[in-house]
Length: 186
Image 1: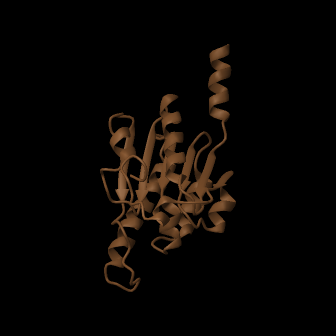
Image 2 (image 1 turned 180 degrees about the horizontal axis):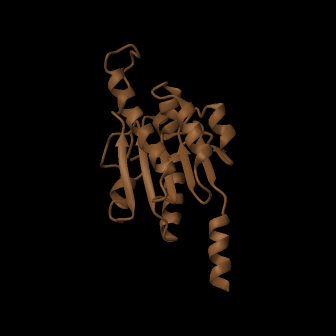
């Protein structure tokens, strides 16, 4: 009887959509902490990174040791200062591929936990449109956990999320001339 109750309770869990945004440090760090928690409970996970292009960031190096995470980068790194640059189309194409992968992951029963890292940045820089993503989020099945990160989250993403945390910067080492450091920023 208890296993039937537990199985029914598992199926009845609501879909969760969480968003970490703001100008402060810690958005991705919080999301990857949730990924560790989900993996600890045996969940199947998918990580889709927008903008970031480096395979050597600490979180990917760590989680790649655990074979339960499917991980993809759909970024080309830093955007050109000139947003009219022909290179911008490479960034848009990569972000569109990431959006297609995100929509597929949200619809797939193969993943319990989907992390869309730096999604808000891709939206804010107009690399992708929000509407197909919003539809996929609204259609995601009950029990799916979706975590999104990035500064400047658009209002429509905030509206669809059930939990939104804004990270506020009080002080950052970069302002003091401290460069990005392995183990801290990457």
